[in-house]
Length: 172
Image (cartoon, rainbow, N blue to C red; front, top):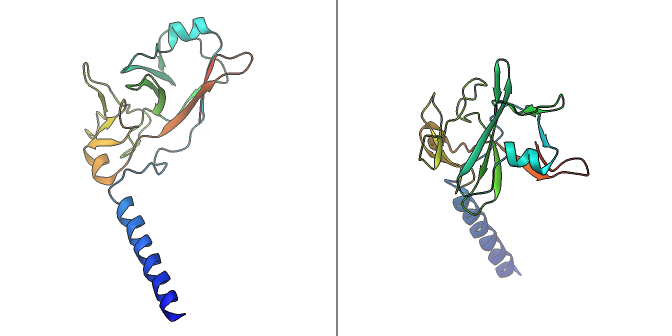
């Protein structure tokens, strides 16, 4: 009986150590970006084709509805639309899957500082701290800079097919 109990304790200790070491070094998305409403709806396929993205690998579009800033130009924002803390980044990953991030850097979230995607690059960059993030291949995990040093990943949002009166919907 004592040998059985000792074996179980050893197994529990090994399991705990394994879980701790496997978890080390991973990026965390600990909701560092302050909560803000997120809701954008595309009511028709035509609206999506004009203002959404086609689903080609490494395609992206930014959505910003803030004091003095409206992006993309001409997008028919509705009264119920909200674009997160700093804005929304909609990307199509390397497999054509749609992923949505907040444009705020999780290292030092400031609503008016928004991630940029340098021409020809496959990452997003914070113009304030210089952190870079994998947005097409690694689900918003940091690549370099202080966000990588701390393991801060980008805030992600949801995109779904809409209901009867909506084609696609981006939500928190």
